[in-house]
Image 1: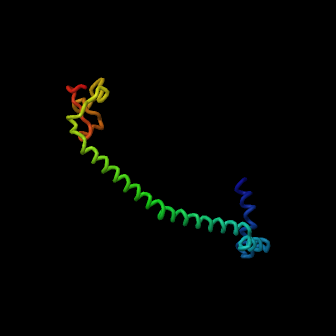
Image 2 (image 1 turned 120 degrees about the vertical axis):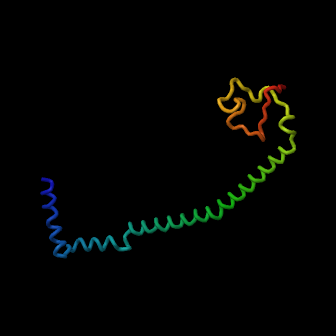
Image 3 (image 1 turned 30 degrees about the horizontal axis):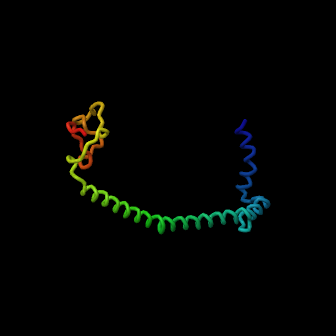
Length: 134
């Protein structure tokens, strides 16, 4: 039933298309909608121009604003990093430092290695002597 109804509705349109003669009202309507004087088309064109201008603005901000800021931040981080390790060079060796009772508290051994070092142990920074107490 549905298929029959669709065929009956489509028959006049198909016949008009085959003859090549479109109704006059339809071609006038198409001409009116396709004109550049249509408010909808003007609005869409304005939106496209605004989008292009905004895209260009953010591209310039990204290139001329963000990239120099990233370079300056990287330079600052490098300077802070070198100052930090220069400070560590002036400190006494790890073995000579005082080990306080609140440092390296162990209630049970870790399940890796010798059980005394944490997972993020760094021998250049961390030191722990089990026999040494404050």
